[in-house]
Amino acid sequence: MPKINGNEIRPGNVLEHNDGLWAAVKVDHVKPGKGGAFAQVELRNLRNGSKLNERFRSADKVERVRLEQKDQQFLYENDGMLVFMDTETYEQIELPADLLGDRRPFLQDGMTIVVEFYESEALNATVPQKVTCKIVETEPVVKGQTAANSFKPAILDNGVKVMVPPFVGQDEMIVVNTETMEYSERA
Image (cartoon, rainbow, N blue to C red; front, side):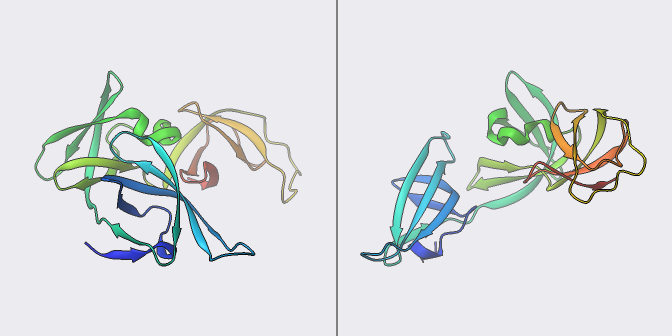
């Protein structure tokens, strides 16, 4: 596996550190007035979900792990576990629902998502970046209100609240960016 310098760590990288697999969640490059620069990295353990803050200097070498990505189809949720099926082999796997965090409501029946495997162990899952949802509740459209930066709250069919432009009305389909949890466009 390739070793990378501490200053090359990026959010989303998976590292082998302290005998575990860790995903870099947040990376801040710090250049103090005294001493050498370092990367302050927030890590999340892929096996148990624990978090760790670690400093890596540019001279530090860390093991970067490549995960195999496979498309899986979401079938159903059972007792806090999400059940997915491999679309090629029809094998089913279970992952904890809290693995998706606040993106869990965007998971829809039959949706294809990317599950990351290390050897044969499923470790991580990512929802598509853009998901189409229906607005179930929002304020009515006001004619002539075209201010560039005005947004109004809306509740989606999955219970998530997002801010939408004033021209979007109730029962309309919109596209939501699941990374930023923001309105993207009309569907």
